[in-house]
Length: 129
Image (cartoon, rainbow, N blue to C red; front, side):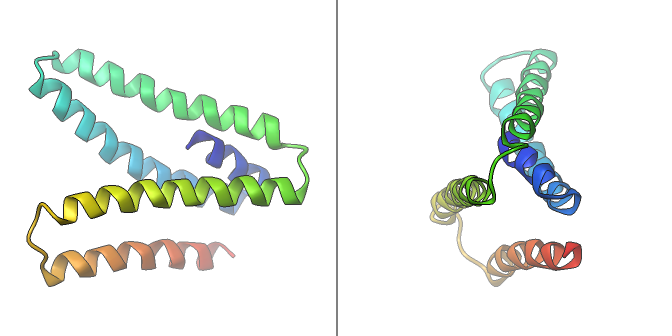
């Protein structure tokens, strides 16, 4: 994930900003889930929070490394890394959503929220362009 943020910054400030916002929201919810699971397993809340902070910092390290490694890369390499990273993130998100979808009864609100999320990302991309 951090590599994508670093790549976005390399491509331009608006791309970096969009990727940073999207991945920050994702990491927030991921951290809340991890803290919940760790607390359920008996890990103290403070230790669970520290674990999540360290995981978040790993993303920052990846962003710095991605910007450093891809700073002088060709356009073809940048496009390839961006395509692979985006596809990997979409796969992970959709895979999790499909598993969760079978555990809950589907309602029109759930379907609408799914598509609103994709629409929001599209609009953010168009506004930044």
